[in-house]
Image (cartoon, rainbow, N blue to C red; front, side, top):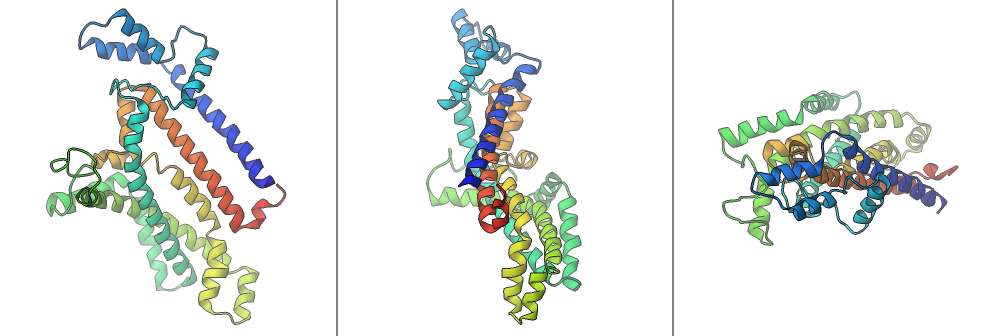
Length: 329
């Protein structure tokens, strides 16, 4: 319990600092969100004084002291109010993020789990068979990892969409057959079909890192005394590989996997842009291009919360896997 309590305090302080920075940074940048929205709305007609006042109050009322804006910002967060988007006015930021989150979590989350599982499994096997022909897998996967994933995405589009037309080029589903997301097997099939190339891009770009890290840790772990002792006792090689070597070798990868899962919400920004995939990454690009401060704040806040939550869960799992992590805490 002491370990959990200590971690909760640390993450609570980190969360407070992250939210405070999320509040301060947009206000320190040049530009005024309220002025941007007024300029955008002014193109479509006259704006009344009441609308001007409502817009300024909506974006924190710059005339009030900073401390008062800070308190109002916390009050809005506690009620789930992330503001209103400038570029997609009058849609609330929470609604935009809520619509984009399932796409990023479904695509990037599943792809990350597949890449991690595949990389750890292959890394365990390659590390166990170190010095044999299996080691030649490492340079190939490392080469794939070194390639920019947006370049891999464009290659996949060229060969499998442009040249052969096996898979769709863009989108998260067939917009010509469906007016929007719906609960039907046909829609699920369309989503899975459109996700094949983006998911393949993520797996190809990520599996090499997990494989190389696990392979190196396996090689290091196999030289430990407890593994040598297990071999001297005549235990089955499969048991030594999985129970003794792999369990300890994968500890650093578990920590990295937790961080990777935290960033799942952010999506693969450039990849989503290449495939026009309706995830959080594409939403972030829209916000930056349009100087949409409320949307940027909302996206960054959700990403921060997700990363902190994923790291906290990882800490708890790490403490269960390795009791040494709970010592002297």
